[in-house]
Length: 74
Image (cartoon, rainbow, N blue to C red):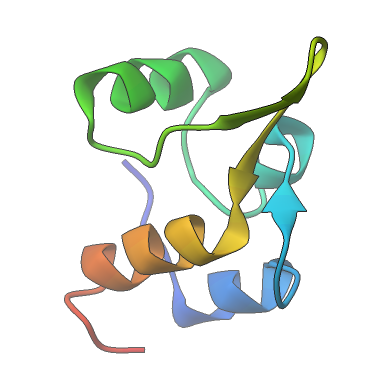
């Protein structure tokens, strides 16, 4: 798996939600299938259904995940 760098935080909006197309490959260094596998396994934040056809992740949850991957250091 590719390394998640501190500059990854710069690719995220300050607050709100982020869609899958914005997450991959700029923020998280894995494929769409791996993203959903990690969500199902509880190793990546669960997405939120914003409407019938729109699913997104809370930016705060993604930031916490990235911070944990860096060992708490930015």
